[in-house]
Length: 274
Ligand SMILES: O=C(O)CCC(=O)C(=O)O
Image (cartoon, rainbow, N blue to C red; front, side, top):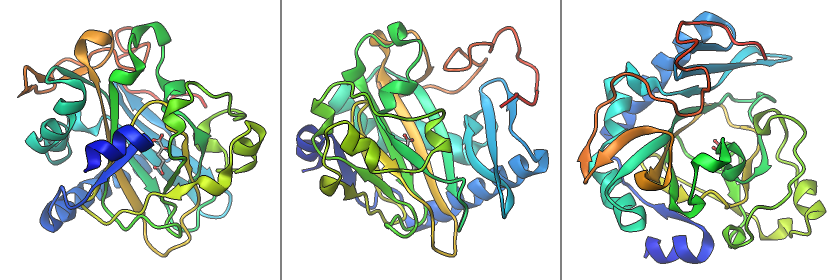
């Protein structure tokens, strides 16, 4: 059972949660977002909506991720409050859920700007005091393309969720660094224990804030698209958009403070520095 896997290993995979037809529709929505991001040619923000566009020395601008496209895209928005999500998350952290992550990831074939250094997601949960129970958080990742070692699937360290916060050496942004196993060795961890999180389109992976993971380059010929939605037990967290209240889905309205600190003071569209 995936619940036992989640508890024992710190992650789990549930197969075929979304159908092939749903995957096709979601993949098309990803492609729309990618085109919108590329039209800016650089990173862009409007409220919680954020496109991160990296620069590959050979390929030029490449879209790394999009945050909170669900404010404007109904196909993507439907996933965050899909009854299947509630069915999976509720037994773990209850029926009152706020959402912290609504994020699309692309790994452009051959791009060097596509790796994630080994990390724990707890490092991104800021301000730390707003997250009163780090164990009351579940991250989900829905595969829209085959996730294999070659396409840059996530690699996870089973059982690392029990280590608490581990000092992993990452210089700068996780997304600007290679998934170097040396960072694990330096922290006294065994990279030989890493597992490739192999997923087929429609499979959903789950992990918590302490699981150590990263991912490498995509050496295949097609994009690797991954849809992340992260939920927190509402009464343990001061941030986020409501996703389910008492098990009922919540629509998005006026943007709330999630991770963009200037959401109320700088709500206008702009090109962020860096
Ligand atoms: O998309 C990926 O491969 C990496 C995802 C990841 O590491 C994260 O979201 O924390």
